[in-house]
Image (cartoon, rainbow, N blue to C red):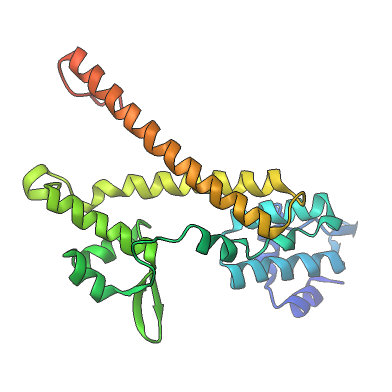
Length: 242
């Protein structure tokens, strides 16, 4: 089929299709002549898979690329068996202190962190505000994150007392995103179809717990090491050390 037919069949525009080809999300078409491109059923199936992963699972293209590559390398494996794994994983790593989502305004009142501040944290991905017909909400894990911000401020980590601002937390969101992307990509790539989705969810949940503890210990160890080096130097690290 030609590009026009592919657009009609999938509902996806040609510029997007060309972008997917350039990014390796979609195989190159057959080109019997220089200015002629033929697309087949595999292009339709791949485009529909990409659209489904975006619209139903809200996955970023970087993760989708890993999924479609795995599908292409072993079509019989059916990587789609792992689509929706996050829905199985969520309850296994739930936040016990806050079993239910909370309205944004209620979180602000409870934690003494203003709605405006919470929105600023959300602007760089530290928390995620969910919106529906009933208002704005924070999931249990996001509620706990804002609770911890409130606890840090109550302990003295404020701009007035210690010079700490909301922007100081941006690096944590950035580093967590990079680490999460690496972990999820490796998990899907390494797992393949050697395990069913239920066992994969249990394995992922245990992995989250283990790595959370590893990161807490590593960070504490590194902080103590940095403080020791500062003591030896007789001053704080300068910009070159950073």
